[in-house]
Image (cartoon, rainbow, N blue to C red; front, side, top):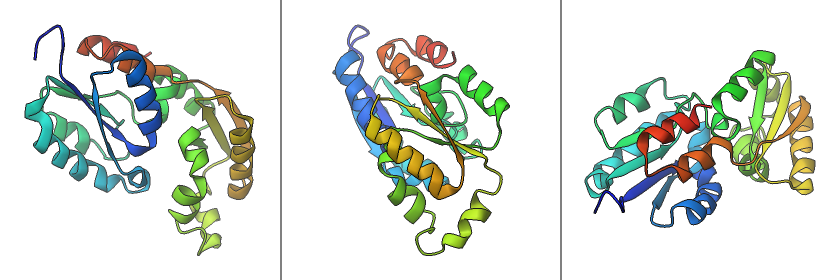
Length: 209
């Protein structure tokens, strides 16, 4: 391993796998990728134990490790874990949605309407599996009003311009009883992070805009 050719591992949420693979092919073909199950999106208590296992197995083998998670409902325990691994860092922000929009834009969107439920391309494609079945709404549809009583609208932050996905996202909003909004954001800060992965400080700076 040399400073010119760093050995990099990306550990990401399975919900980011497709986008991360595409970006690695474009910006850093030498980076390796491992993913935790996308189902952890609904089980944040599993994220830190899953990451800990992968870090214990791999941290000594890489110059740097990029964690493709925000805090993602871990209540700060993810940051406490990463404090033990100086070669590992996560993207800033509370949610993975902010990777795509950028932190400032995401904060503005949340300030505009706190009761917002976000979907990405992946979550639109797997909405029935991750949201409807994952939250038990297929078996107990009456729980919808309890789970989403504080939400007012669904915002689809799209990575690709795909009319079929827009149609599916609108149907998802209807199923949840929420108004619908569409925003094309592309790969956003996630693309910046992967493109600048050879410079740790620049990764953090680019992901915070």
